[in-house]
Image (cartoon, rainbow, N blue to C red; front, side, top):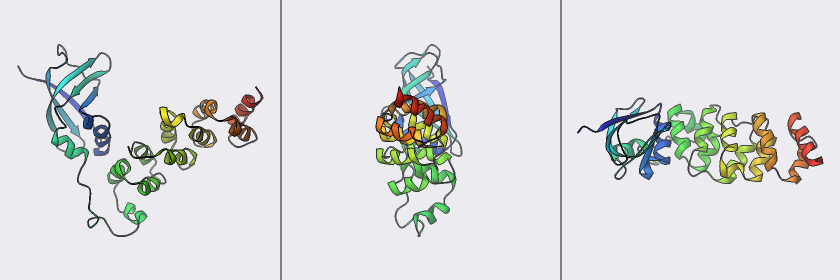
Length: 230
């Protein structure tokens, strides 16, 4: 019997690398929107992975679960080497890196290369990319599994950060519960206003009093005053 075919596509290598780190490297993958009619958990399937700009890859997998209205979760017997190579492409050695400062090196990199660096780069590289004019990179930096809480705290305060990245911080279960992060988001003029107002509930009273004196946008200051008084 021919194995059912499942397909999944990624618009860039960086998007695939993020999925590889979050799911594939752990032995499985959720294919959202997919369906395999009549196929049960444990059935063999053929997974076709398409990444823009790269040759199509087909790897065997097994159905872990079919979630109605969501998709199909598959599991692998070990991480397929073809996916591992694409998820963690060759990293340049010190000799292969362009000479010069980090800022000079970044100037020579394409957007795709910067996206890959954002997902896997060092602390200094992350800090530099969070100041990059290409706001799309900010979200990729926040997806870097090595990013530390103090980096997120600084990012939450930065008016250079994109609204999308600030929204990602505010919706992160661990980060949003940190009082320093919450205060930073509330004060940040780039945080979408509904989120800033929502985060007021997580700001310590000492910071609320400061904000109520004028340490943020007018709507936020007004809301902070009501909380302090009430």
